[in-house]
Length: 315
Image 1 (cartoon, one colour):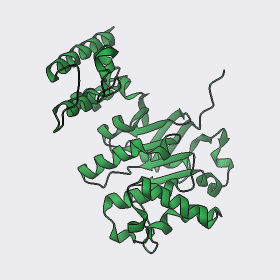
Image 2 (image 1 turned 135 degrees about the vertical axis):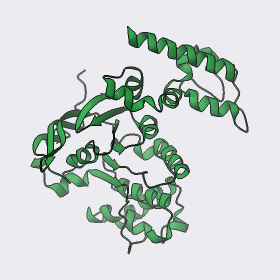
Image 3 (image 1 turned 60 degrees about the vertical axis):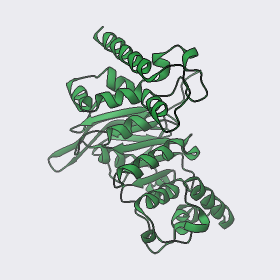
């Protein structure tokens, strides 16, 4: 059976502003239901690349195809109706209530008022914004984290198959940011969406991505899974980029299934897919998890797994 065609296909994209080349000959595919994270230092071209996908910026060269159709051959308003878009500054309409902000796109598409109301209620509930309390409030009455949740609800309101997010959690404090990341990862509404997300936060990228595109000076340095970028870096830039957070990323990348036979992780609290980081938190928390190994045994197995990864990379 042939592979399904990609939802997004970018081919030889180039974009310059004056003499400065921001995106240089970038090509990639994004599969249905995949989350691709664009990562890299400031000025590497990741936000420009994201905006090329929904024609907020037009490329100088190259093409973008959405579900097999050239994006430039579609009316831009039609193209964007199928693409949700979330930005760091949120962009809520200040004179609209929370419910009215969420309902903007469905109203433009002519959805029935009853369906819009039901969809708005459902989304606010799932994003921990109880409608009875928040639906009638205005953006200035909300915290930064609450505004970001409303922005995400608005992007999802018309149920678009594609979601683009540009530093969506960048303006939030670390605790709120970590909390919203967890909600984002577990949100049922996003399970079947194709997501492209821009971030400069390495931990965020590793937590959310199926694959990461690491960019520098408008060029792809490596496009691969988080695990491959960490343990199979393509070049010196990739190795240097992750060096400062290498141990923390290793803890978040390796799972109990990598460390122990499946029978040793078959417990009520922990599974083979639990990361070493999450297992450590579970074992040392206020209510320690039940496991068939101690913290010392866990860390010894972690060290052995790292050695095996290093040997495999050197081969």
